[in-house]
Length: 225
Image (cartoon, rainbow, N blue to C red; front, side):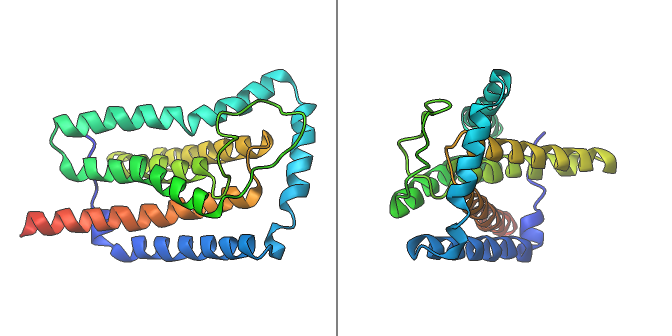
């Protein structure tokens, strides 16, 4: 059975540290964006280089990169719905709340932040593919937020169930590589600037630490009371 290991509740400083560090990184990037700071200077040159590389890459590689969009979006949505139904049937209210925060509210957080900053995505011609989200603002990256807040939460659920240290390392490495793949695919296809990805990752880390710590502390207090 999948259930929370209560590590955030046992060690709330971990979640607090995640929130502070993630918020700090996002705040620095947001300040640079608003004031056109030096941290943005590599965004456009890198986007142009990757765009050129994507145009000259084999079609099969382009398709692999396009698949990254769906791994960081639709696949997450399907996993979230299935696990939400499972937790609902099992009446696992703490886990269900954590799923809603990690898979659902994080998406609303992306919408609120992206429309607040309203940063345009890279405009590079010709397009490698007409991505479904090209009309949306690009800062921060919704895929980057989703990868951390959803796949990170899944890892948090599963990791304590694995006894083998080598398998735990394999799982962590696999999730990290999955996140790198999804985020790089967004850069490679010209859907985001690098700072969009970093900012999204920072928001995901901050939200994962804050929301899941708060949920676990709330439910642990209710169960003990």
